[in-house]
Length: 534
Ligand code: G4P
Image (cartoon, rainbow, N blue to C red; front, side, top):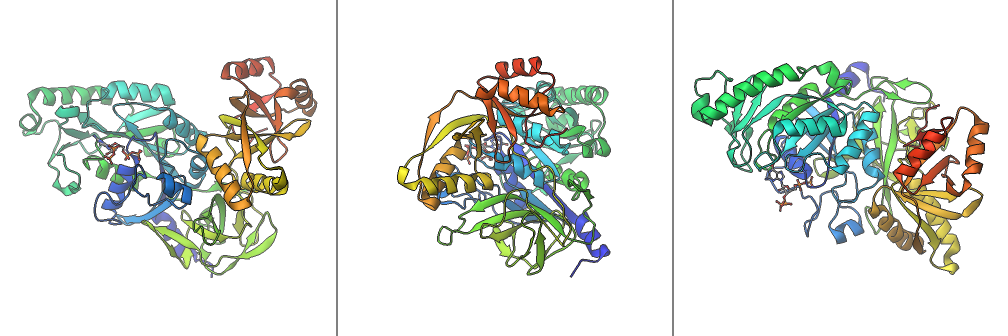
C-alpha cells in the first residue's frame, strides 16, 4: 500500500539521517555511544566499541573484521530522541578506510564533524569535509576533548576555517581548558553549563548559570575566568556571524560546539541542536528529475553492498537509502538498471545495534536488502519509473597497485572475482589504454587492497599478486571537445587508464606533475570523482 500524504509527511518530518565524520581517535565512537545513551538505545557506557584491540565492534560483520578487530563496514544505527527518529550512519573506525566512507555520505542529509582539540584538523577530516562540501551537506562541528590540554579555542577556529575552507559560527564557547576546564557558554541560550567530570552522568546533573552577568559566575569559575568569558563573548559576537539556520542548511556555515564526549559534557546540547536544526530527508537529484521525499511513490538507491555478513550463507546485504514514498515489505519493486521486478523480502532495519525485519520504512531510512548478486552500487528501486540517482560516484584513488593473477590455473576465477568485486565497489579497476591486460587497482585506503585479496581467495578460489606502480594521483578527464580529449589521451597514453565504465583517467606520480599537466592543458577538465560535469 502506498503511504497517504499525511502519513508520509509526518514520517519525513520526524526523520534525521546523518553521519559522523572525523579522523580516527577524535572521539567518534565515544560520541556515538553518548548519543545512543541519551536516545535510550543503550543503557551503559561502553556498549559501543570502537573495535580496537580485542573488543568486537557492533558493526563488525566480516570475518576479517572480527579477526583483526577493526570495523570496515559502514553500518547504521537507528534510535529515537525527543520525538525524532534518528538514523546515524557509522563510518569505518579503522585508521585505514575505503570509498565506503565517502559513499556513505551520499546517503545522509547532514554530518557531524568531530575535531580533537589537542590535534586540531587532521587528514581524514579534511578529505571527508571536502566530500560534504562538494554536495553542500550541512555540517555541525564538535570540538572534543576540552578536558585535555590542547590548542586554544581561537587558534582552533582559525585552523578549521583555513584548513577546511569553511565559515564557522560558534554556538558554544569554552571557559578554560584542560585541568582548568570550567564549562561551556551557550551563545544562543546565553547560559553557562558548568563542567563536571564523569562518564555516565546525565545532562540534568549539570549546573547551569543564567549568563555572563549571573552573580554566581565569579564564584563558580573564578574571577579571572569570569572576566575572560565576558571579553570572549564580546569578541566572538563581533567577529563571527550569528547563527543562521538557513546558512547552516545551505552548507554555508558550520555551527561549532565545544565539549568532552568522554565526560558526557556538551554532547546533549549538540544533540539538541541537531534535533532542532538538522534537515529532515532532502530531495535528491536524479538524471531525469529532482525526486521529492514526500512523493507518494517509493524510490531508493543502493549506496553500499556488504558481502558475507554471515560466512555460512555467502549472503550479501545491499544498503538502500529511501528517497521518496513508503517502502513496504514483500512488495514487488522495479530494479531500474536490470529492468525487472524484484521482491523486497525480509528487509532489515538497523535499530540501535540490532538488525531486525521491518514491514515498512520511510524517506531517510536505510534498510538492508538480502542480495543474491542482483544489486550494484548506485542501483535504484522504484514503483516503475525510470530514475537514476546522482551523487554516488567513484572517488579519485590515492593508492595504486598493478594486479596480476597469482595462479595460472585459476585465470577464469581471477577475472570473475576482479570484475565482480570491482562492481561491488571493493576496489576500482583501471586498464591501461591500448593494453587492456595491464590492470591497476586504485583505492583510497590500504585496507581495501587486503579486503580484495582475501575475498578473491575466499569467495572465488583465486589469488592475486600486487606489484608497485609509479602512480599516486589520478583524475577522471573530460573535454567539451571530443577530438581534444582523444588527442590528449593519445599523446599521454602511457598515463591514461580506462575505468570499468569506459571513462578516461589520467594518472600521475605526483600532485606537482598533475598540476603542471592541468595548467598546460586548459582544454581538458580534470575531475576528482567519476561524476563528471560537462
Ligand atoms: P574514534 O572512534 O574517533 O576512533 O575515537 P574514540 O571514541 O574511540 O576515542 C579515542 C580515544 O579518545 C579513546 O581513548 C577515548 O576514550 C578518548 N576520548 C574520547 N573523547 C574524549 C574526551 O572528551 N576527553 C578525553 N580525555 N579523551 C577522550 P583510548 O585510550 O584510545 O581508548 P579507551 O581505552 O579509553 O576506550
